[in-house]
Amino acid sequence: MKNKLKHNLIDTCLAVTLLSVCISCDSCGGGTYVPDTSEEYFTDVEGFNSAYFSPKVEDIEADDLALYVDYSTCNVLGQNSPFYQALVPSWTNAAKDYYSIKGNEITEEEGSVFSLLKSITNHDYADLKTAVEKMADEDNESVLLTDGEYFQESIALGNVNNPYMKDAFAKWLKKGHDIYIFAEPYQEPYKGATYNKKRFYIIFTDTRLVGNIYDKITQTVKLEQYPQVEMFHLSADHPKLFSATGEHTSPNEMLSAQVKGYGSFEAQDWQVDWESAIEPYIVNAVSNDTGQPMTDGASFTGGLKVDRNSYGGYRITGVDVRAYDISKEFTNFCNAKAAGQKSGGEISPAEYKNFAKVDDKEFKSHGMINLHFDTQNYDPSILTGNPCTYFKLDIVITGIEPIFKQYEAMFTFDSIDQPGQKNVSLAESIKQCLAEPDIKAMMTSRPVYTIYVKANKR
Image (tube, rainbow, N blue to C red; front, side, top):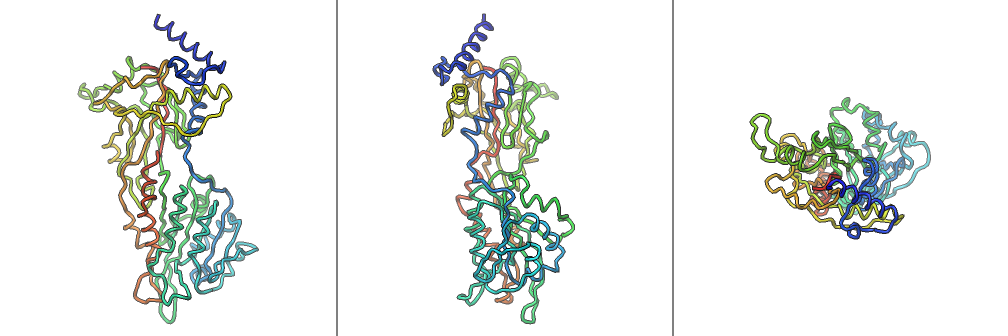
């Protein structure tokens, strides 16, 4: 009788969906949408995520690199640098626009990028501040070749500790993008003395952009051949994630789950019942060694690893998982889709408290994110979907600690106009950018990975 009732309910909900009579699961008497196959479910999840939870990241144009070149001694001398020469083909092949920075004039130059780079002459008082601000305002990749010295004719001494790039860095990061910086040491003669300086290659890009300029460089230039060159990555979004499968997490075998990954999220279709499989063998799992109940049961999915240094200036120290009941919202979306109605906007699904947790010990030891049910507080009454229940699991960063101090020396160099002092303007630009509350909040306010689950009713 129970199975017959279940099948009748499924048939009824499907019929209502196809006839487009009912647009909310409430008017189905509490019934949830039931896809015919896992593949149909995966397709619906992809649409649901796009409609309601796709991250709001400003688009960046592909294959549209702008190259900004500081016409100063650093790039004149760069003609003799093996590292500089190794990068020239990357700029030649990728740059669509070439801007010369000659004093306070920033001019788009015509001609071959290769020839332009070979004909650089020295001009004083490069307006680097305006150049990097232009880069941050653009919606494409850009690169600045410079020694980082920002001189102004109206100021007697250079801006040796002026964080003049801070605002531009923060603006680009707030768009959700990435900054890479190569620092190449070199010596520059000036008025009879020799100064230890740096040639900086400042790259505004996004790691998610297929064929981005940083990837092109690492694929064509053997960076290990230039041990004197240091690299720094700056980001406030999308930390690097890895999984054993390369596509998604690995569900517990007891779930007999079908699973599909979509980069920043995945969908799992659990094939077993809660009472006969999930609760006895996962929620309340016992140790194979002792036969005693495990404190947090067995992991229901895992194998996801985060690079805890992904943000560059901060190290990730803590992660958590937040669970949401999306049975109603997902059903509404699927029914509206079947009725040809548009969905989107904002929704606020109810959060499952004390439902899932991260294995903190495993994360602290290896950066691995394995998810368990919160066995100590487990309450299955929250699983109200019928005949299917849907929930959403967001992996979020909860702790970060500053680590930029260990990279500071990479961005300091001898001051030419103040002998005996160090120019720390670029280091201060990064340091003060990282100290901005909005930048720090970005790192801990957005889900870094999401898992959608379809399970049978409890």
